[in-house]
Length: 167
Image (cartoon, rainbow, N blue to C red):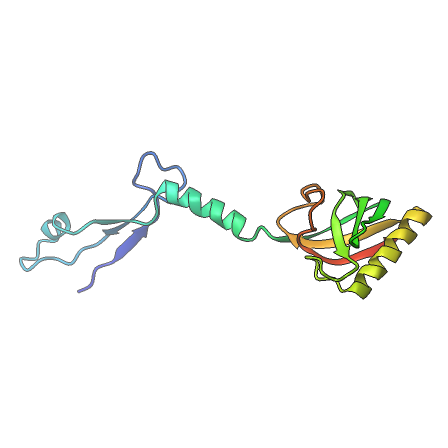
């Protein structure tokens, strides 16, 4: 003698519109009791409701999931103006690929971008070439920002490739 059970995923909470509220496990067919009375067994059967996740927890989980993978790869492309080298060797530009006054690197190699002195000199030469020729450059990033969220007079965050001259 066996009993069949069903899994109902519909919400038993009248305020729950998402179906995340509760899961109910209810017997469909019951095994008759010792007296052979299936109705009595059915009336005495156990109906259990297991709270899976509350509405607030579901909403928080969805928000957390959205921000968990928030780092993304993106590129910024645009003109170069005002290439500047400070007395201490800090390379910046009034505008580079839409970014305003970012700290790019230092010619002494001590920058937060981890660019070596040789790399910084090459970036400087490329930016001067772009500025003189009117060509655009492209930079690659991998962080939670975009081309408008980089703060002026601060090292670039998430910068991992470029600049590259673009026709």
